[in-house]
Length: 233
Image (cartoon, rainbow, N blue to C red; front, side):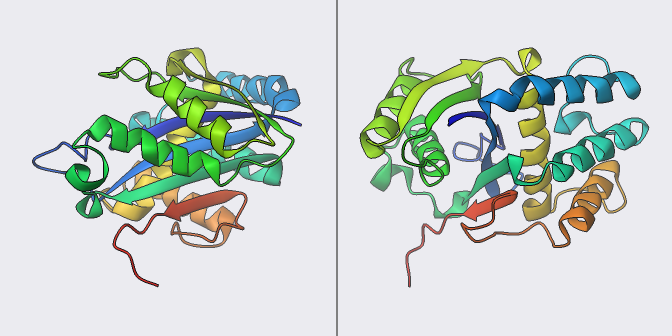
């Protein structure tokens, strides 16, 4: 089976910030069968047309005037069940030791966590294409290194490519941005009570019938992997 994965992140600056505005950095991923890509893109474009949403739709653009679009988008996502899946990794920046574990390189640490996000959902004999939202890196080979590590760790799967694309070129990356924003809002709890973003989070929770919180690996629809870097049982 050919699988495509579309990725984005929330609060990627936490590792370097001297005045962090959140506790958790998140990297999110949207998983679908390659054969479904065209149908999903068509459905999203129809929703954009219906609600007259021009340009990119992103989590930071959630507003009272657009809230019905975001609710409809999330409802569509949920109706597809496990045919369209979301998984994110949440990293508590207070637990990250860049000097000890990441050669004092925040960019290296970031892509190590990217690997952890993807690796545990890779299955033998499938083919995978990973599309990451474009990010300006200090070292140009980060995605090549990520692909190499994934290939070496998953010898019975075929990692076809790991490449960057700009979010404005992909409604699926934009959807990943919205979903990781929802997960971040649920975990970091930074929004104003009653705001449009908090209303979207509450709507998602009503559809999932649970709070936005860390899940077990077996959760396939809206999976939140809160990595524990503090050790213990």
